[in-house]
Length: 174
Image (cartoon, rainbow, N blue to C red):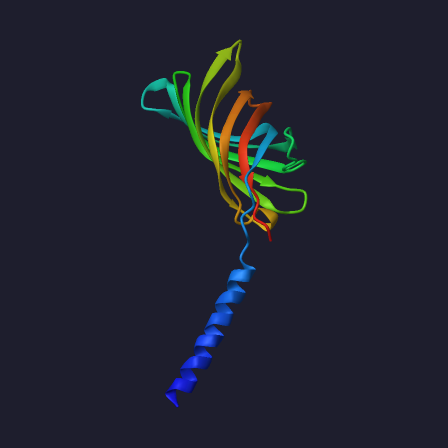
């Protein structure tokens, strides 16, 4: 009697496992991607480190739009919100943060980034440039379970910052 109860439960458990595996997203092959974010700084909080006026920690928020610049169309027309932390020490900047892309279909892709740069003040105008690496942190909708990584380069000012992102992106098949 016990044997008859065990066999049906094993079969049912196996069917549930197969069904669950069939519902998992399959990873697509990574594609080479390139895209450009055009951003404006909307919020900055600045704190001086100790008594050194040339050493500051700042948090920033930039918003803007994105265009695809590579052969593989990706994030075309997406809205971008970049939030980051910068340790600016005498013109040498260390930075890390996140770039959230809201695609036109409502899906989101969150990239984590880390890099270095320089900032310069000339005639009262602040400009900066630099770069680093990025990787996919998370996603929703069509970007759920995606993976990818690459490099970014930026140049600009608080009024107009341009970031060029390149690398690979594998969007999970659903």
